[in-house]
Amino acid sequence: MAFCATALVGLLAANAPDPETLSPRTNYMLHCQGCHLADGSGRKGKVPDMRGELGRIAQLPGGRDYIGRVPGVANAQLTDAQLARVLNWLIPEMTPEIAATFAPYSASEVGHLRRNRLQEVRAVRQRLLTQDRGKPLQTQ
Image (tube, rainbow, N blue to C red; front, side, top):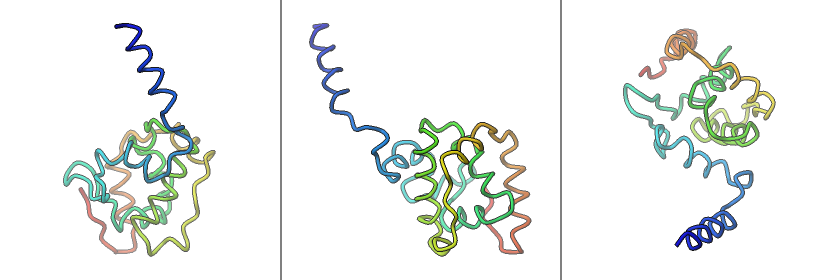
């Protein structure tokens, strides 16, 4: 019986996809979708809705840093390069109107940001929301 279990684990490991080759969408599904949902709508009162908002936040002074330091990003079980690819796909996906002006994250930028995880997430988010040139963002 132990031989069968060991053989099965070996077979599964041999056929598992290389995490570095997974698409950003697949990594989003595996690591982010549980809280943010497939469409990015989040969970009212608990997880922010990213649709139409994520790109706006990314363009605010301090917004890029905020996105790279929130606990869900900082603690993601992805490499810095994988996480940069997810963010570079996700931000224009959630806010298409900024796709042409969005500056992609580099793996080194993501690595630097996530090592300095935010402690006061709500306070920083609220500060960002109040500086958004009078355009109300959804607060949750």
